[in-house]
Image 1 (spheres, chains in turn purple, orange):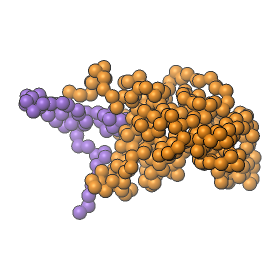
Image 2 (cartoon, rainbow over the protein chains, first blue to last red):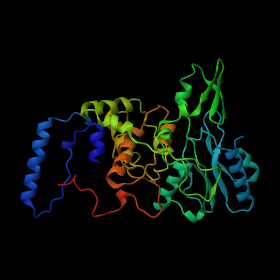
Image 3 (cartoon, rainbow over the protein chains, first blue to last red):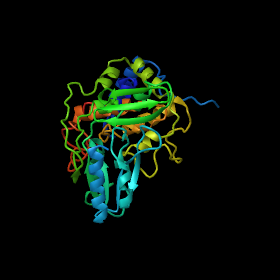
Image 4 (tube, chains in turn cyan, red):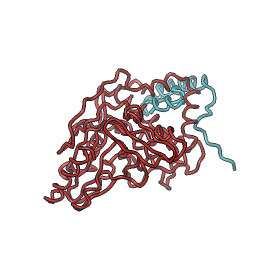
Length: 54
Length: 315
């Protein structure tokens, strides 16, 4: 799925897949930090975004 | 009449006469040139309507579901692979199918042919490897090989993988050094250029869902695009909704698509929706060594688990 998104032009670092048990707090923190850094480096996403005019 | 059509009619006629099958699903000449349409033949006198030529671009595996009795179906290489997929996915019972296999030499790209003319084509006559096409103002003779659909020019399974009868002799399969040149071309672009490519590709989409209806993979009683509660995707022309539809439509075909080209054939806006599915075919092949519809005994990769499955994407 990530491959197809990347093929469409959604950067690979925006989509992350993880399996974290509820007992793995440290792993959760580490992965969220890593994801945040990677996504921050890419900047705001403008693709596949739908805006509602309310 | 070509020998293939003749053989198909003989086989169909014999099957119906012996009451071995209730109906024969095949192609008939359409109402406009270069557009053969599917037909269900139930009596011997209608057998004469069956044809097979290089305008039979739709996929007949789409019509083999929900029959009570035994049916016969004409199957090109890709149709046969989709029949295998149907058998694997319990949509058709192999025992209740009589497959009339037709080794295929590729289907004509109607748009490519139409681009030779400024006015409407009124006649399309095939003769072996060539075809003569007429419009009101001019006549052209083409070599069919030069006007094949893109998927047919890259086809490596033109002979049916399963069949009960064969309507003509099997041809030699081509082997390709670069099987996915179109996917590689898109892959070499940067993220923004890729996105731009797909925006251009889908900008004319009218959400008619012909691509979904034409191809044999989509048989869900309610498609995700038609679902109203929850509504997975907006129904309008918003580009994000259009992209979401195409993305998910393609992903539902992962490891199942045989690249038969029926989706592109059916598209009224000439969108090459195969740009999405081809990527998944390439991934299935590279990650799982899988090509859809070759074996009735193996489950598709996204339907089965193996400890050897690639796990690099998950952390």
